[in-house]
Image (spheres, rainbow, N blue to C red):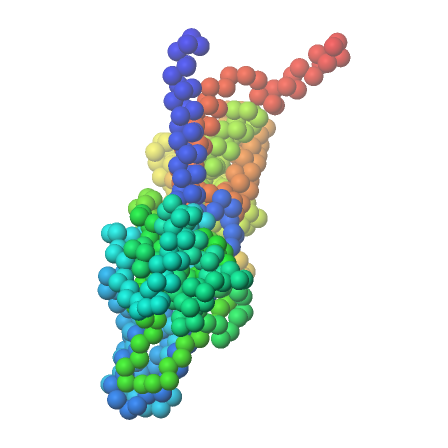
Amino acid sequence: MSRHSKTPFYIATLMLIFLGIALAVLRNQSMGVPWLPGVQQPVWLVDARIDFQAWGDPVTVSLNVPDNAPGFATLSEQAASPGYGFAITNNKGDRRAEWTIREAEGPQTLYFKTRMIPTSATEAAETGTDAAPLPTQIFLEEPRATAALTLIEQAGSRSSSPTSLARELISQLNSPKPDQNTQLLLSDASKIDTLYQLLNYANTPARIAEGLVLEDARRAQSLQPYLQIFDGESWVTFNPRTGEQGVPENTLLWRQQSGSLLDVVGGSDSQIHFSILRQTIPALQVVRAEADANNLGALSLYQLPVEQQSMFRMLLLLPFGALVVCLMRIIVGIKTSGTFMPVLIAVAFVQTSLLPGLAAFISVVTLGLLMRGYLSSLNLLLVSRISTLIVLVIFITVGISVIGYQMGFATGMTVTFFPMIILAWTIERVSILWEEEGAHEVLVQGGGSLLVAVIAYLVMSSPLAEHLSFNFPELHLVVLGAILLLGQYTGYKLTELRRFSPVRKYL
């Protein structure tokens, strides 16, 4: 075959490798699947405690809970409320946790717990909306109305957009030397309420959000107010105390809608406090929890039943074993008894452990060879001889299993994993090889098979191989491409280089 005719093959193989790597990178970026096993994901545990005094009447408690909080994703939510009914409702974006009970009296305590996962910084910049909101109608009496118009005109002359207008107003209200108009407006309202009134009065949709600063092991925390304005496309958050745009780092916007934070019907003296704790969990646990909501979730093996997942965890290790066999046979030049037998042996070692697997395999093959020698003296036909070996191998397996169990070893698990027909055929091939080539060739190929199986076992049993094969199944396209490229190698094997060692004397 000419070199030019191999060009399409190399192009297709390289495209196969590129496709596998690209899909793996996409899975990492889209689903957050880590490249390495054991990676931990930080998680914030936020506990909201509600205390109130019940009157002895039916009680309904409604708490606003996070909904699409920028910079965070909800991992789990639960309530601790003995005797209360609990549900989470969502009314036009106003997501609330609701407790109900037919009758309650005296001090009451309710808990709402949520686990939040930090997301990318770009998601924390702003929150979207489906429809452009209208500004809230604000009515101001004189002289507050004149003072508000004066501040709006001053800020408007130095701004060109809703966001710049908000920054200018925040700067004016935070001025160390406020003018008379600013002092008048702040005399009857807080800074955040004044900003809310001024922006809506200037026909700029604005609302007050409440955020929680996340610090590890903090108790009895309260929400801090934040200003959000609509810039024509999305809601943009400002810190009214500093004027900084965007949600501060490690700040969870608990409430973003205009509704109340807490409503209690049938009680009084309600209070709410927050406790915060930082935890770490395996990143794969987060991936499993978010697999349904992710675009690539349908292609994830986590969607399969647990029983099938266990099967594929082992099955997807086989390509790595096949790659090891190709490397050892094509590049190194080690002889093996068959092509796939070392991979099957390695799979059995992965299921149990190396030393018991080696002992079981050598025992079965050795006993099988002894029996094969006797069968050979009977001059049986090939089909009958193989069938007899299968039955004998089963008896040998049962015997080793019983003896191993009595001695306290789980040897039977190792042996029964080996395909009986493959074992019987291997015994037959080794026996024929012994007769035709001699004991030396049997030791070479048998030892080579065990050596390749041990190397494949070490590769397949590594945590990295198990992690990549199951969580990034598209990487098997890369393995396939590597095997195809190895199939084009026609150079010298490493074991053949010793033939040229005498040449070194003359160089």
